[in-house]
Image (cartoon, rainbow, N blue to C red; front, side):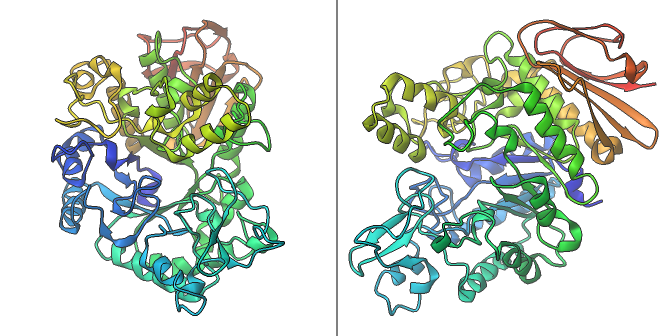
Length: 540
């Protein structure tokens, strides 16, 4: 087994983690000051969202220099110190690798714009106008066309995200060489690997309007592995919104020498109307949701590896999205922890999830920082949507939801900063904060801590088979894990209503492992589940 197969990864969104110098923005020294907290939680690795030099059009996912640190976050010396001090606590730093695109302020693009004869021109994707307009119908994930006209040359450049995020041309071997050299620069510093932003887009064929899963995608990733990762004991996880279990095996089968694992989003996408955007939402069908989670558990058992997550910097917080963040906040936060951390794969915790932080609610578009939400708002306002329904969509699906500062204590700015924070602190930080969680032995934090420890101590969680129970039940998610004669049963009621179920076919309960209500034993013939109750037990 590889170290990352029984590891738990914690995602830090550095802008919102801890401010050390009073400018209202989290920074690297702030992270260093909280390493003891992360060690107490028990995590093995930190996925660090970008801290590179950037104009921050998309909060650091628009990089202007891959080998420099943004002054907001500190210096390269701070970064070296973080890697070293994390390593002292057996925590590896996994960097965010954003190589589908750069910032338009990257020196490569500045040079590329100087003209068609620039040696950097072919680092990006340029096309002549068609019929006096854009080259084709490709659209940006952030609204509008994916093509922007460069007035100087009369050509369009491609950007699948913001117009300030031009796409790199991976067909250019020199681009790939530059990327690999940069990756080796970081790997030689001793980082623990990379999370690869929208990596399924680098093989795009824009003239055929192919963006994800292009024909050369896996050739590029295999070449990347040979040039940077081979022989190194590191973890890689690719962000792949287009993935299926079949393509996941291409990425993560060890014999193919590509990536350790991928993030797939099929369970997240169930909230969207098919073939529409993330803003066209529908109610979650829990039966369908269980079916999708089971598919990924079962189909990657032999020849691939799963990542496990409920939320990250791009998605709303799970306790608000699928749980109950008022009456049953602690119970539903623990429920989702128990359900996730008993599955097969590498679990990821998004900062604040471990104390049950909730979504941010806004009343006006003036409160929105995120470029994706702002663009959607104004585009749909012009199409006749009401302000009320657009603000509702942002409150349900917007990316700022997960990006509010960590709530360390109940002081004015939640212990995140002495000054005005870049995004407002949640009003509920008075009740929901790390200080309170550490003082309460029944808090969400200690449930996460116990689940992380269970994974390290029990091979069944890492290697056991997965079997779904009660597939048609509309609110209960129950499953068994089995390994070398040992069986565990995991059960959770994802609703505010009590449920009565029978799992007598699983045999008899033996030892209670973890639960989110006071429950010492359970009769499998007639289980009375309270709202958002979850538990795991060892079976006889």
